[in-house]
Length: 323
Image 1 (cartoon, rainbow, N blue to C red):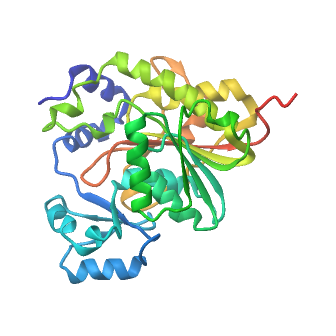
Image 2: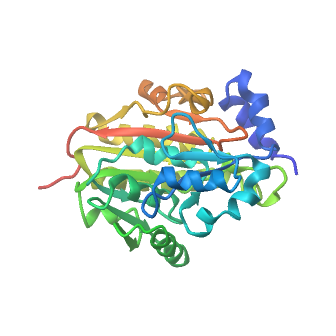
C-alpha cells in the first residue's frame, strides 16, 4: 500500500531535501530488531555472551548504552533464544530507547512516566534508577493499564508503582515532587508507518494530528506541573508532525515563560544515531517557532531506527501557584 499522498506532501516540507528519498525508502525496507538487556533480572555481559553462544548475530548500537540489534532476518532466532524466553532481553526499537537515555535519571531518583503503557520505557527507567529509585507509571485505559502492570512485573521492575488514571491530572497528587518526568505522548505514529502493513496508516489524517495535539499539550503541561524546580523533563513522540512536536513544546514555552528552558537532548554525537539526527524545525506553515526549538531533535528512520522526536526541558523555577 502506498503512503497517503497528504502525508508525503507534508513530509517533503519536514525532512531535509537531501534526506527525503532515504526516509521514504525506509517505510518499505525491512527493519532490524532492536532490544535491550533487562538488567533488573540478569547481567548485561552474561546475557550477550549467551546470545552469542547460541549464534544470535548481536550488534551493540554505538552511543546508546545497553542497546543492541539483530538484522531483520535474524528476528526469529533472537525470539527463539534462551535470554528472550527467560525475560533477560526486552524487544524495543532503538529509537524508543533514546527517550529514557535523554532523560538521564540518576540512581535513586523519583521518576514519573506519564504515558506509560505498554511499559517498554517504564522498564528501562526502572533499571536506570535502580532499586533505590522509584518510577510511577500512569495509564488511564483499563486494558492497557493491566498490560502495563503485567509487563513491568515480568521485567522484575519492583520499583515501579502503576497508577490507573488520567495523566493530565496526576500532578495534583504530587505537585512539583518528581525529579524526572517522561512524557512519551500518544501520537499519530507516523514514524512507524510501513507500506506493507495497511493498518499502520489506516487511521492517519490531518484531523487525527489536531486531536493528538490537544491531548499532548495537556499532558506536557501536567508533566511540567509535576516536576520539581531544578528537575528535567523529556517530551517525545514517534511522529513527524510539527503540530505534535515543536508546536506542542512551543505552546508550553509561551505558557510558562522563563520557568522552562529547552536544553540539549544529550543524544549521541557520533555513530548511527548521530547520522540520523537533525535539529528541530524553526518554523511550520510560515509560523516561526522559538529559536530554542532548534535544540530539540528529530530522529530520521532507516533500517535500524523508527522516526522519533525528542525535546528535553529543564525547570528553572516553580510553575504552581502555592497561594
